[in-house]
Image (cartoon, rainbow, N blue to C red; front, side, top):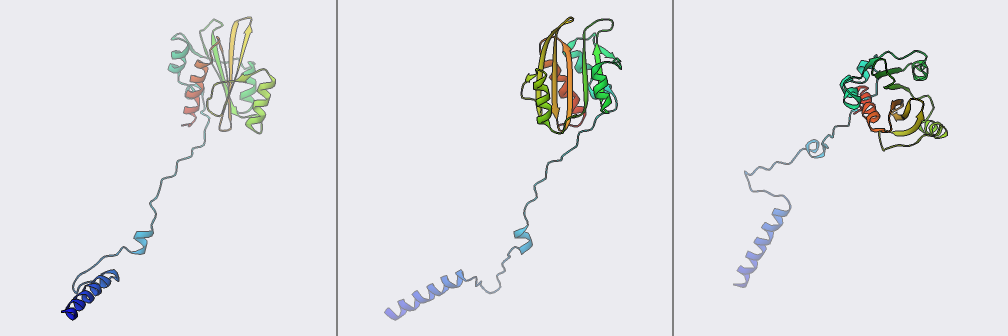
Amino acid sequence: MRIGTAWVTMAVAGMILAGCTGVTEPGATTTTPSPTEAEEPTSVPSPTVRELELPESCDELVDLDVVQQQYGADYVAIDIDPAHPTAVEFQGRGGLACQWGIPNSDAGVTLGVATRATATDAEQVAAWESEGYAEGPDFLDETWVLSEETVLGPMITAGVLVEGYELHLTANGTSVDPLLVLARNATENMGYV
């Protein structure tokens, strides 16, 4: 009996070892993935990087309804005076200078946009600081704000940097929020997502 038990034990051990070495029963088929199937990494789409592009007109840069939502339904597009400092500076750099307001009044908002005049954002920030601007809300790349009291009442100015472009916005009032809404609309119309 002991010989029979030993024989059965060896036979079971042999079957176990055969199973471990990949021996299969006759007629059985196995499939193993080919090296290309097993080793191919799953592709992850890379984000699309789109370079900003300046529209050809103020109508394409900022939607009039956005201006009216922020400042009132009586605001319309107004041709900016070619001697206006924003027009001189930003158009001189190949950019746009835009203005909206109430005709025959002092109420209005201006926007200039062009490629940044300085070599770096840090240089532009330093220039704004030297002019009395204070750091504004966390918005796009950099936002700096200047509040002034003028003969026309309180004025608010925002300087905004985004991907190599400078935006300069000025309006009557004390809140920078409406200017930032216009800046956001302008940058989206330039291709910023």
